[in-house]
Image (tube, rainbow, N blue to C red):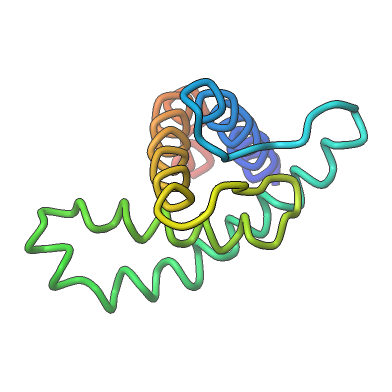
Length: 132
């Protein structure tokens, strides 16, 4: 249970950092963070994003497996961006304020940043096999 909470907080931090980077380069991926009370909606939004990734994201990646093989796995970034756009459209903790292709670009950049931060900081989390 502790590892799940740590991964949840790590993903929330990744979404927050992706929001800061996206806004710095002029894209519309935003997290509301003006008060401490804004933390709970962010955590709920991250839980929704995790749920969408675990269910819908896995299904879409399975259905587009041939295309992903042709692009050497790069199409999975597009799927991650689409799932992030879907979660952001609910406007629970984070949102994409751009329209059209710029919204997709914001989701694409944010999903790459989120994956990078999770990958780098995930190294420092305890290993799941350490409990055996």
